[in-house]
Amino acid sequence: MKRVSEVHAYVYILDELVNKKEWGRERIFTQQECRKIEAIKEALGLLTPENVVKVKEDVFYIIEAKNERKKINVALKEARNDYADKINKIGKVNALFISGIAGNYEEGFISKSQFFRGGKWETITENDVELTGLLSKKQINKILKENNPHIKEVEISDEEVLKAAEKINGILHEGGINKDYRARVMSALLLVLIQGSELNLDEAPSVLIQSINSRIDVLLKKHKKSDFARFIKLDLPSSEDNHIKFKNGLVLTIQELLGLNIRSAMRSGKDVLGNFYEVFLKYGNGAKEIGIVLTPRHITKFAAEASDIQANDLVLDPTCGTGGFLVAAFDEVQRKTKGDNFEEFKKYGLFGIEQQDPIVALALVNMIFRGDGKNNIIEGDCFAKWLNTTTKESVQTAEYLFEEKDGRIPPITKVLMNPPFPKKKTDYKEYLFIEHALKQMQEGGLLFSVLPYSCMVKGGAYLSWRERLLKENTLLSVITFPEDLFYPVGVHTVGVFIKKGISHPKDQNVMWIRSLNDGRLKSKGKRLPNKKASNDLEKIKDDLKHFIINQSTKIKNIEEFQKACPIDFEDEILELIPENYLDEKIPSMEEIQRRTEQTIRDYVAYLIKSNMEDIYE
Image (cartoon, rainbow, N blue to C red; front, side):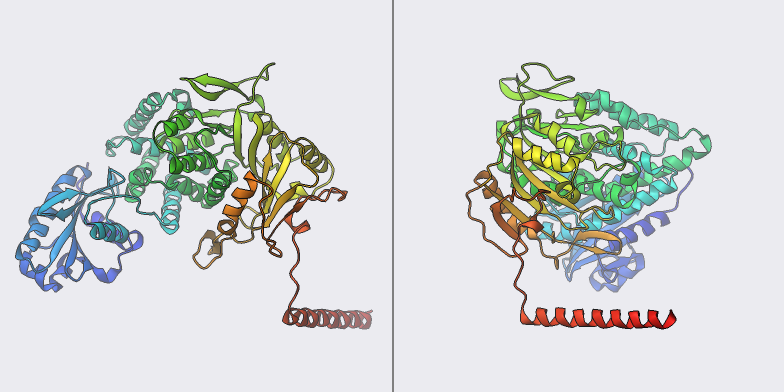
């Protein structure tokens, strides 16, 4: 490789520290600038590291850089021996944190970090994985608070995920990688990164691709998922002129993921990968290109919690997409259950079907990152798949059949789903997915589905479906979601909870909820969590969970928000929406006055417009 200056690293370090790691520029001293700090000037004399970060008045973070990735250990050693140890020796301030960073914009960057505790330097890990990016303000504060370099669960904010996702989309665009191919590229790179060993990013494009693909083969074979390799393996562009461009896109993407400490993040209890996929595909337009309507992760989590998923449940998502509902079910059980019961659930409790190849790859990677590569996610048309009760290793589970057979015993106890919304007349209607899912369920099983609002109010075939649904099953709850829940996709949705196989009693209450606030706000073309936004889903979650178990549960009647009451079977069009059942608020005198004034203004405007039209006639 040609000689590369360390200037690349200087630019990269400053960008990372300021834009991603939340260090203010005033806290960062570059080379000679650190001589402004008297204690450091005294300790180092004319020597200066690449960067010094002022953590506190007496605590500092030292960073040393090298121009090639292979020199990472040299960079870390110099940060420790040449700078931090000398600063600590004079005892006026403490250099407790060091990072070595090595690389350039051609082969990417890698970082290693250590913490000084009890007279020894210790490698910093998060969720038992060595960090690969520079240290953030949150990570350092947690280490100092606990006096421990082995930290857990440092949250990656939505802003960090958004920045990384947007940057990676830009990188892949510059690399000439089409939107509909980016999901595959991301799946491949994440699978390679989970293995821990470093790729040689300085290899020729064809060698690098071969190395990536061989690692994918090894990992999928380990998880007994070799048949998925064809959905994930990468191919170089047909034109050799674009090989270097393609390779650079891969290298810089790996760099961004390592900077995000994606390896440690994937071991956290939060669905970081699902959140990353959602943002990466949603705001990079990749989702639209490959036909995904991504279910927001706070909705999948809400559904799993309200459905009270347990270790003995068999959970199905017949249109699993990137695996969001399956991950939510996995996390819900992991939160409640440890030991053998959880291990059995990982092996035998999760079932997912997805028709689109690149999306299957995303779901697979999502679950492998959670420590489960043996789940029952399969590729194909859910209408051509049937589930039957079986036993494996003395555990009751399910098996896929490719046709419905006499004597089949439906095994599924819980369904979580968001069926594809039809874009043209020839597409399957949403309710057909629900009907097919119900056929896979045990009597008394619980189904949750996201549906377009229109499904619950339209006539014709939709009315016939609603009548059929109530004749054969019990409707437990309907929730109106915020109109912009799927922003930037414009579709108004509801969530429905259905009990399988028991005809809806006419006098039984349904819990009607109008949840127009979910803790998110739109800003600059994005819809992200905001502390200023109220969250109706959190308010109703516990009551809803109790009501699903026992429909006699008393629910407080709150006007225009929630109510438990029976279905009006006298309604000829059978509109099953909360707005039909919730009580209206009694307007205050101020509201009456405001509405009256508005009505008068509208009427005056109408008269003026009518008079002007008469004049011109």
